Picture 1 (cartoon, rainbow, N blue to C red):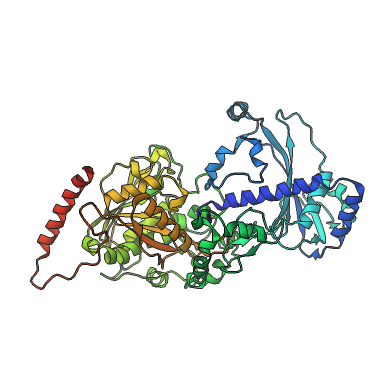
Picture 2 (cartoon, one colour):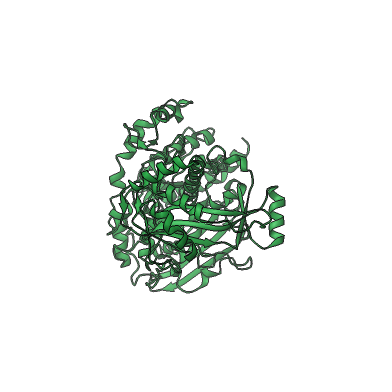
Length: 636
């Protein structure tokens, strides 16, 4: 079984939803020719239950954007792009957007793809007054742009009819009591046509956007079949009756998935395990925040949550599909000479501040008590002076997870490293992804561990290449001591990295099976034999990762540990109902035993030293062994 929930950008799930709905719209429109069919359709629409909410038909002219489709034939099967597309940049293989009117750019795009350039003359967007998207259509201009404006009445009526019988934003078929239109001429011409459908038009056309200040497009929750990807607006989608985790549109698709070959990818192999994963949904949702019930719901409206709290700037923009400042408002796209200039500006937590709110103080008035380590969000919030209604845990999950590994897990699994007594730590963050977009939240590590000099190296081929070999340091001296954090970057896969050996390796929401570079990076970690911890979005992902580790290195992974510092936002599963949370579980690598050594690492905790024992020679012998091992490995 394969799931991309938690790894693929939500904007891509949304784009696939739009494409699936639009394809269905075009097919249905082509089959509705003839006056008799039109009369039957109008009669069925008049029988639909009325929607008390006002519907709005937005007419948006476009003079700025054109596009080319790389291979128009690839959409015949009903998919806009392949499962390998996980980030927005992956769409470059399928579609290219260019600025309309820029002749050089247009010619270059057309020449590169060998396909004509298309312009969208008008976008027809149908929503209700709350922002729910009900349907859309657009009129295309030809490759030369010479085609004149197409009459919109027929397209608008067809869009309204399909949106009433098959609303994109889910919900039952319904017709609006009242509709208003964003174009005065179209508003007047639609009035007699809509009366046949039992729909009234507003007294006048909507001028401008004209809706409530709180208007936002809510997160659209539309499920799809795990096998054929058919969306729920095309037919009923139900969960497997045994595990309640995987969604299917028919008994045929369920049986196909049950009997997949090889055996370990079929649902028959996974069903009982997934039932166990589903049983932990309540425990994952058990968080101390006042908003926990809302954000852990299957129907969580993330866009509405962010908008209502003014979380539309800085790092919060990365959590939304709607707010996309060119550089997230914090200078992430600076020049090559100073690519991360914002690291040196003022409060490092400025990018966490909500619109009109207060930023998180750089440090609390009192440092944490020596040898006192926080084990939950509640303890941390209390020490930091944060109310439990503050959603900062969504972004602080990355540094707090690293803190949990340093102070709780590594001392337990690797006691010989004596990590709690180190005055400096070199940490590699491998295959860095979303965490790179919230860099300065890692300053919180220096707040929690004020007497440790921290060096974090972010590694991954998805990082901006201009950052390779660059670094930046942050230092602060206060009552709590001298804090220091150094950030470095390398835009290459981990197995190609040339850097000093780290004390610790961390990977967030790793997804070993979804990226080929892990097949080379995992053996590199096997050769380094350093403590390596990884987080995952679900228990299912941890099981898949363990199989990937075994295949790549011959080693294994430890049992997954539920992360007390997981993100509170539940992530939407399109083809499944499993609970997914960023950084939900943690596991570490268990390396294959080195030649001549039957013991795998990490070793069991070392027994306590005898009363008359001297730890210094022990540390010296360990150092000697570490110096010998690399040579032995090179002779393999």
